Image 1 (tube, helix red, strand yellow):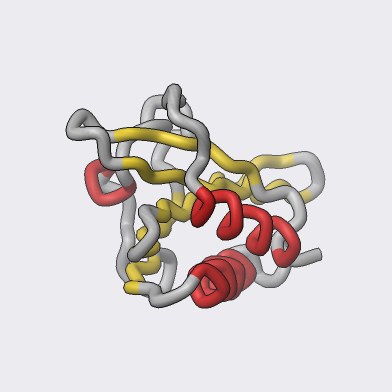
Image 2 (image 1 turned 90 degrees about the horizontal axis):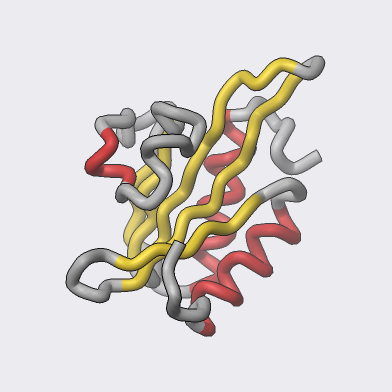
Length: 121
């Protein structure tokens, strides 16, 4: 976790995404150069069994998403591209975004797709 407070864009993104995906969790990070970014995660649980932790990294202009390789244990705070997780379709997502609304909707649509609709319930 980082010392800096969430940026207004991060707050707006998470607020909107959490409206679309109940159970989403937010995590805030900073790179060594001071670049701020965040991860939204969703624990995909069916019948009490954890199937996956899905993560979406957001830096204000891009979404990078995939299945966390370690349920956000060792990979928490490491950008998705650096974890080795699959970020290509169908289980991953890379998207340039122009607005907070677009970012939240694309992230929610992807989370719903990879969880077979469980994320939005």
